Amino acid sequence: VIVIGGGIAGLTAAALLAHAGIRVTLLEAHHQLGGCAGTFRRGPYTFDVGATQVAGFEVGGSHARIFRHLELPLPAAEQLDPGCVVDLADGSDPIRIWHDPTRWHQERLRQFPGSERFWALCAWLHRHNWSFAEQDPVLPVRSGWDLQRTLQAVGLGTLASAPFSLMTVADLLRLCGCGQQQRLRRFLDLQLRLYSQEPCERTAALYGATVLQMVQAPLGLWHLQGSMQVLSEQLAGAVRRDGGTIQLRQRVTQLERCDADGWRVHSQHPDGRRQSLHCNELISSLPPQCLPALTPMPEGYKQRINRLKAPSGALVLYGAVNRDCLPADCPAHLQRDGQDPGSLFVSISRDGDGRAPKGQATVIASVFTDPDQWVDLPETEHQERKASVLQTMCSTLEHWLGFPSDAWNHVELSTPRAFAHWTGRPQGIVGGLGQHPSRFGPFGLASRTPMPDLWLCGDSIYPGEGTAGVSLSALMACQQLMAARGQSLTLR
Image (cartoon, rainbow, N blue to C red; front, top):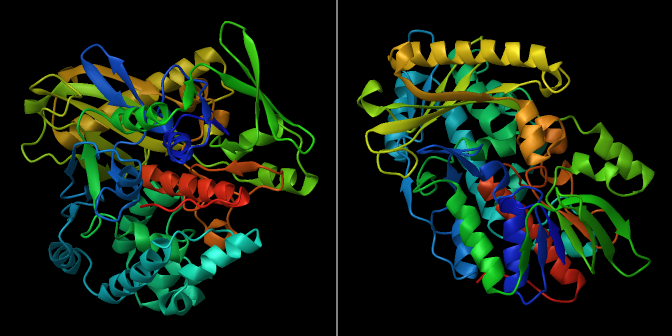
């Protein structure tokens, strides 16, 4: 098997197959692994490229299950409590999303009076969703094996929640009499956009109900010791330990179907050297929008891929300040509503977590943007707009967190153009497909493709998004691949 892409999805797929005794080669275009959950260094500072927190470390969580199966220890991590502090910038108290369900319930009563029917419905949907997901169903269903696997996961709760599958989170608000609570709606829009790429009016109810519970016990969000890169390093170590091969700086240029005999994968090194490898099966963790340029495919499938609405790009500020410039009780993750440059999601390193020297902190602030507005700009205009946005983001953070403009020890801005260059993602897109009801679960893009022996995983494949989600998409693709071989892959 050849796995394309060395982000968390590709690494998880390669590690699972190598552990099952399959001969695996992973091809990664960059000089390091990790993808959007990778890191880079600037002097004494280590910055997480995109993802800055993880889910799925709790008992029974996706990372916990997969690492246990691979006989790997979970990386050292601190549980986030609060998971995030959300400032609606309307003069009201920030909303603290607590890990303890009772404490979060009390916070909701204070912040959003009259909304408990909505939260109770979300909790009910989440319980049934989670019970279903724990059985590793295969969605969307594309074969008899997929159907059998999914039916085994269906319980009474799944059937009871099925009528909500075509609804949005905004529909749940209206159903519970909360449709006119604008402050609650603003909060939900901010949170859901982080996970679903969509506001509550366009986020699938079943998906939104679950992600809104991710911080609370028995689940939780985690801040890794060192950097996000430790996830990649441990998975890469498992691939190599179990006999797999990892090739860096190999950008795939063509996928060629061999008549009834697997695939030939053509790739190129930055120095111009080319190679051609043969495999029986192929798993791609690239954004699906990359596929039409790499291989012929059935016209209907090609049209569907080309019609996929590109997710957002991101503007990301990477900075560092002395820790005593920050508020004394500054949490690790904050979110603030705003118009210019937009709502900010901010991650601040913890003292001693390996990202900054003692007494300093890295500050990563991101905002969604339309990649079309950046990738084709003339270079001069690109630099001018970049400088303007950087100044605006710096000023916003200085005002919000209360430190002077000369406090920055380091600051730089990354635009979609930089993401496109370093990740190879078309237009520098980040995240997966927006989780609208028409693209979630049974209506989404399947890991099983119409091309024989070609499987997909990553943040556009159910359940997608975030390191925990892409790990499950990799597990699903590997289980389908093994079943096609007449074998099984069950997590221990």
